[in-house]
Image (cartoon, rainbow, N blue to C red; front, top):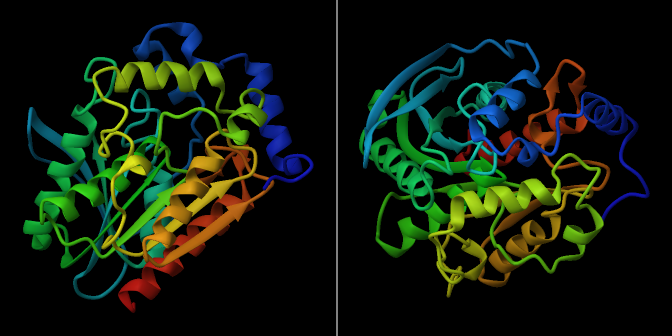
Length: 314
């Protein structure tokens, strides 16, 4: 499931990360410092132009939640994609995934709404999940506020893929928002660690074992192992869920659990588009500008957008 070695462009990125000596982020022992270091690594780029980008807040279970609405240059209302950013539930914010959301809005033709959920360790599970689901409910009942037409998808990468998958399960279980599609980019769906990819890729490929342990301990220390909203792979059933796109990468330590989730969905009768990139690392989907400008990242967002367009017949 992985190439003999990472793509040459990825090797350059990994060499730059090693030279900067910024990882693992867990070594700082302070989430605010880790967030600051991570922010300094972002590409300074504006991304594609859109019809509008708007910041606002919506009600949440513990105060207002910041969201950012990306409207594509299209006529009339269009479907809405609720996007939940990655970052191990500890780092990441609206800025870290601004480029991803801009590109996805353009490629999909959908309104993309990003959520700045509460982060761990200050706010452990289920805070991020509760915030994400609250935004999803708000979007489902207020499509006119975003330029949406009432149709709804969820999306997210890594920790955000966990939140998107969990929200989809809860919506089914509780007869909640009607979700038409789910886009899961190298989703974290279990705390089980006995995967080949976890051993193969635990160091030297951007996402490291110390960071995975730190993220998990920060967010999940109040969750049980069999809670499907914490660990979606362990849900009793995956039937009657919406069609999905799953994106995975060969040199990603959580590659195998993403593949397992795609296979589990398929076994439950869910239609799945699986896009696998054998030469890529965790995080490649958001490496879209500057020194970390990967053709595969643009390709994956293009395919994701095409899948959403097909699902909504845009």
